[in-house]
Figure 1: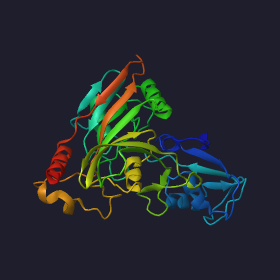
Figure 2: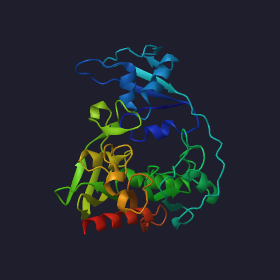
Figure 3: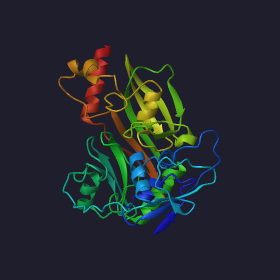
Figure 4: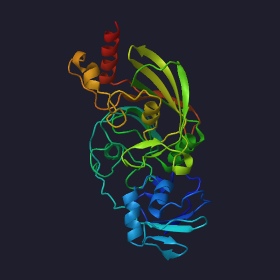
Length: 340
């Protein structure tokens, strides 16, 4: 059994959920000012990728210890200096069967591949998505790094299901480690194009607001202070085109939190068009479908347009641009026609 300490670790969720062995998570409760939080709530803020209900089950099963003794009371109030140990069972292993799904390969050699992922495709297997993922397609195409475990082999970073565009895939463990280091060191460059509601007053800007799991809706992320589970998130943006009551914006990620662009765009008052989660109250249908000749968006109008990284073996810079999907181009044309 592996023992890990999450303090200062951004990739803890992936490390604990690698599909191999059970692990033990050790935490020391820092100094608490004010009301002492409940055990289940505190654990959720420490590891927001695990839901509160999952922590409650682990607590009820005696998998969480305080000072060496099992604590089965989810309402226990943690105190400054408490040593909390949680046993994380290994997830159920998935029997991944390669699937012959067509792939749009933008770059490939013996170390890595860069794929133009279509909107609607999930990157790796998860609850509710046991087939048809990018991983299933890749397994039929080429060997993959084992670092991601049985559920995420070769996956270095992710794109949301309905976000299209360039995604890097590691074919060797060396490439996987090197590419992840580039992402952590912010030397890899990821640029997106998104169509948003409204027109920001400025032409460019930076959003530097921490992001964490939404405290109520576990399917969403939200702006959260660092001391409540938020993690540093920085997004740079620049307007490419103003389209009356819409804008085409180029986003550049400095960090890579889940739903980062979608959360930050909504926070600035300009959610991504078609976003079913963060664009509530902004109906694409009433805004533009009448003049779109029946063309529908598969989800949010967000495309990973450009990916720049250093080759793990040669040190040569790789600069890949993913073609803009047809539905995205159609949306832009419709909005341009509305402007004229």
